[in-house]
Image 1 (cartoon, one colour):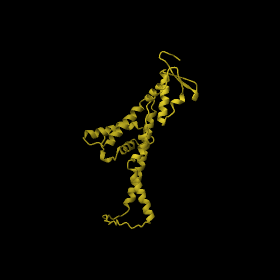
Image 2: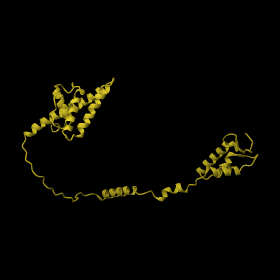
Image 3: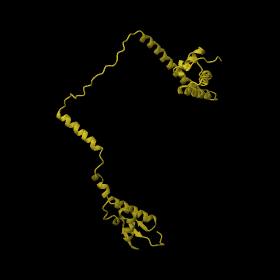
Image 4: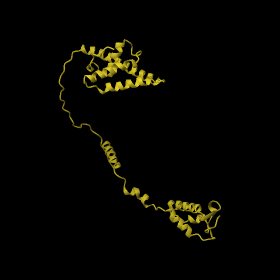
Length: 238
């Protein structure tokens, strides 16, 4: 392989270098085998390192990309390698089109004469000259006040219902239910909900009854509102 004599200043980036290597092979971008360019590309990077030249990170990134493409292309199932090569060919084709268009625009621009003048300082008039109806000003004033109010914390009154609500524990209702029962006496289940002043108290009562049934301290006979509750003596089974 012939020694590399070019310098990094010639190439604007790794795609520019790859296009140069493709032109040396005298094939089109769509027909080139990307893996055939890897050794020459790596040789170029090593030549720069031997000359102690700074290598742009994009050149090193492309080198890593090419090595990966070559690695996956050597696998028995190389669909990914071919897909990556096709993707890189597409990037090279787009870059070549951009170079071609840039060259044409450069030729066109050279045909125009222009005079460069320093920028002029413009004095900006910051005076507000628009007029508004009083109703419009009031509307926007109220809107602005509303936005500022939304940033304030909610008033204490908003938490009154939450703080004032009585929390009834299940344990307290268990004690009350047991105190209302006598051995051998049956009581209607609705009697335990009488006098409940809040939803919290009713829920706690219901959970307390379930807890006592589970622990086999009470026995419920019947259904719905006609059900009766009976205290179970120690050692007795129902």
